[in-house]
Image (cartoon, rainbow, N blue to C red; front, side, top):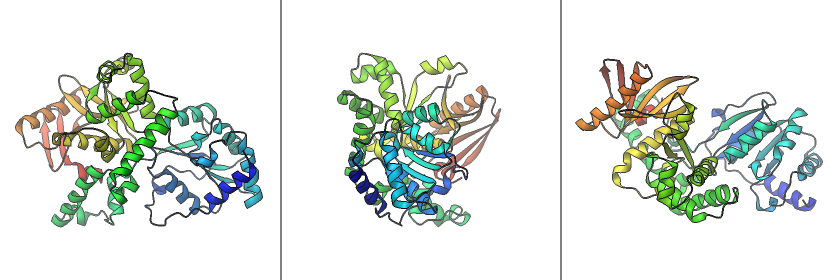
Length: 415
């Protein structure tokens, strides 16, 4: 790459102004004090660059920074890393801390990062593609890094952006609960993308979706089947959290080969737009062929992409609970026997929790269905406690095989 052009990028990015009006999120990451490579991954526009710069400005050494999601770096190749390193030293003197934003844009980046690490440097990197990061990290950087996934704002973070401090006073008072519930319903509709919460612009969501679809899915995977991918995303977002198979999806969007649909889903998941969970089975082979349930990264985004009826409220509630389970690092499946339980959580080789999500238990038929589903999961995995999350209910149900706690989703999100 041209030396003068690279200098221009370095200076421009160094002098870029970062707003001081941001929510601190670095403390929630699993950062280490040693020279481990710190990897922050997640969907585009979830706040990775802001977190990276928060970390950067907390450190004494902060000058060796480069954001590779810059159109002037389209011709940057792995060989140019050496020139970048030399320019850093010329401009700022010798430092031992590097910050690389959206580094997966540069093919072969992991070899340079490994060299830096081998010489005792501290490296922070961000990326928006799960497969590329996991493959390259696992191939060349095994044992050298810590991984952190960054999601759009949690409910707790959403409240912080609205200057609300969560305490017992607010959770257990009438006025406090009313305030929390008001913000909860807004959060369920608006999601957690930081920029969208500022402007509430549907054009922003449209632009974000287009960017993810084109840059992180179609271009990165060298796909030309744009219409098929759009049809797939539209169908999945319109059928949020419903079990699907590769064969049923291929018929729905008019693709002949179910393997093609399987690949499409993987590309979408790599971009962090969707997540697939399987029906739990002790046989890994059966897990692979069982129907999947698909969830999306953000409620506002999925609402913009699909077609929904008012009765889909329960699906959005379920999607919100799933995302929080992912934030908390759980391995998530669903249970399906005679009845269904929305989520079961596995820790190691053991199933530890069964969780059902429902808008309300006020209807007798719904109440029986939801309780029976969670009880069946409790029996199947020898659990003595289950959980049902609703919009507003709170009680404890005693059953023959244990207890089922009913909690409002908003309260559970704050635990």
